[in-house]
Image (cartoon, rainbow, N blue to C red; front, top):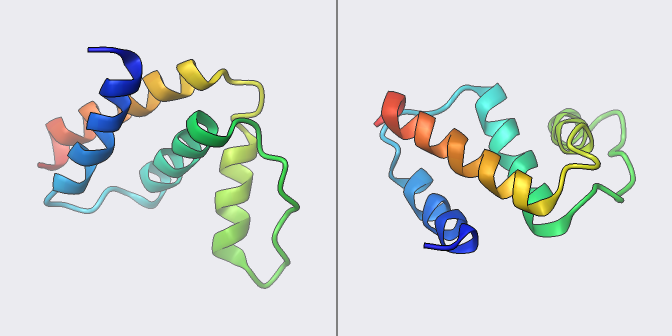
Length: 87
């Protein structure tokens, strides 16, 4: 199975979790997914009243410079860990 196929499978598998991941885990899932699919964050920072958007933007921005393949692998690894602990 290729890295891309494993990444796609992880996207399906994460939806089968029976318990909710922590906010930090959810932010990391989001940021790794965005880095793997869109690359570096080039969007403008959300306004000061969009707290959730700021957290998401900041977490994705911290992944700047990470290759798409590395982000895919990290996403797969995180989903695997979550499946082991939250399913």
